[in-house]
Length: 198
Image (cartoon, rainbow, N blue to C red; front, side):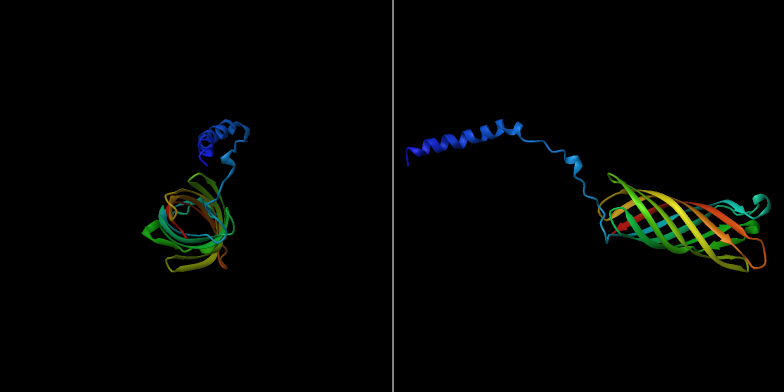
C-alpha cells in the first residue's frame, strides 16, 4: 500500500491538468439560446391606471364642434395569461370631462379584453383590444352603447410582483339614438399604471 500511495498522490495532482488541457475538445454552448419567459399559462395581473382623457374628434357633428374639454379617467383591469405572450381579461373604467357651460360628461366603459405582449429584458409591451359597453350620462340624458378600445402600453418590471408603466388607448364610442343623429365619439387616453403579478 505504501508503494501505491505516491502514485495515487501523483495522479491526484496530474488529472486536473489533463482535464484542463482537454477542455478545448468540448463544444462551447451559447447560453443566449436558453430563455425562460417570466409568464406561463395561469399567470395573472391586476392593473390600476389613472390619467388624462382627451377628445379627438366626433363624427356626425357638423364641424366637429363637440365642445368637450380634457378630462380624467381611472381603470381597474385584470389579465389572465394563456401562454407566455397571449392574455385575456376584463376591465372597468370611469371617466369625466367638462363640456360647454361647465356641464359634465360621464363615461363608464366596461368589457372584455384580449392582447399579446412582447418582452425585451425587463421591459414589457402589451398590445390589447377591449370590446364592451359604455354607460354615458350628460345632463338629463343617459345612453348605453358599445365601446371599442385598442391600445398599447409599456411596462418596466420592477420586481417579480410589480411593474410600472404608461398606456395609450383610443376610445371609440358610437351613439345610435332613436331620435337624433348617429355619432362616433373618439378619445385618447394617456395614463400611468401599476401592475401586480400573481
